[in-house]
Amino acid sequence: MKYVITGGGSGGHIYPAIAIGQTIRSTEPESEILFVSNKGGMAKDIYEKYGFDVKEVTSRWLDRSNVFDMTKTGFATLKGIRESKKIIKDFKPDVIIGTGGFVCFPFIYATHAMKNRPKIFIQEQNAFPGITNKLLSKYATKVFMGFQKAADSFKEKDKLIVTGNPVRESFFGRNRSEDKASLGLKNEFAILVLGGSIGSKFINEKSIELIKKINGTSEYRLICVGGADEGDALRSEIKKAGIELSDNIQVLDYIHEMEKYLNAVDLVIGRAGALTLAEITACGRASIIIPCPGVTENHQYYNAKELADKSAIIMIEEDDFEMERLCEEIEKVRADRQYRMELECRSLEYGSKNSAQKIYHEIKASVL
Image 1 (tube, rainbow, N blue to C red):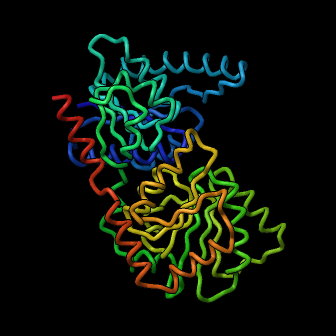
Image 2: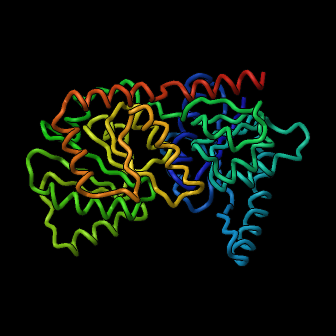
Image 3: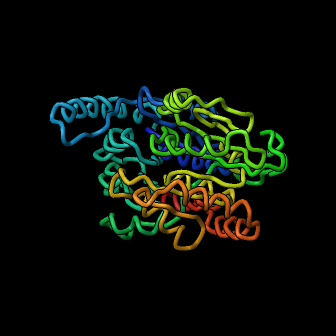
């Protein structure tokens, strides 16, 4: 069979697409898989890194508050639809899988009026779906959801299946001692601070405060990931603050081997992106999660709340954030090994280890 998998914009759309692609490739090695990404984004390079063939199409975000921007988006979308039709005509896919991001719209829309069109499937990561997936769901045979809450936003309930969010193969079967040694971690309490693939100004600001408290201490190791868009700003602010980083502090822009870092550290502090939560729970890590309040439908809060209600994470809302409380929570996780182990067990229990396989089997059952 021939599969097209399309998604882009951020890691939250890119890495679930890779997880699904890896499952298809390992389960059905004779299949042909083509990834379709947006032009000018980071998706193409990441997909190629995992050994997939990639085509790019034109797409653009939608800003409904700006007429000029809406016009530009309209022209970009029309161009993307034309490019998509050519790819479909040349590749002749049997199945199209969309994981979200603006690139999905022109590609999947291009198929909707086709005679004998490919079967379309949507994978929605968040508790509140993005506008692209809500619009495209009417063309889909099935919609795979990371959270049950997402069902409230889709009209055609018979299409919906809760599968959890797919995580790449490399997250499973890892040796924690080897990953710790690879990162030079010994007996320190290792903390990984994440703002998401793009980055978070708020998380980075709090990272600087945490660096000031932990810098030079032997009990802690702190790894701060600034993000693709915010990493330089984080370094600049650290320099402005006059902080000379000790050996126990590491500042990175982006992590390509997230599985290694998540498996090795003792605590993760970050946002509530659906993929971030899926990867944290796949590794069974203790975490302190601060949902971003500025995202569509406040979906990060609902992503996190489902886990917080099961005591699988510690959630602190941004409006309630105090540095003193964060430090108290960190110290409690560090000092109370039993508490940390309970958090890890509940995290691992929530983590979905076979989401990609569920999605693959549902697709095959729908196509055959």
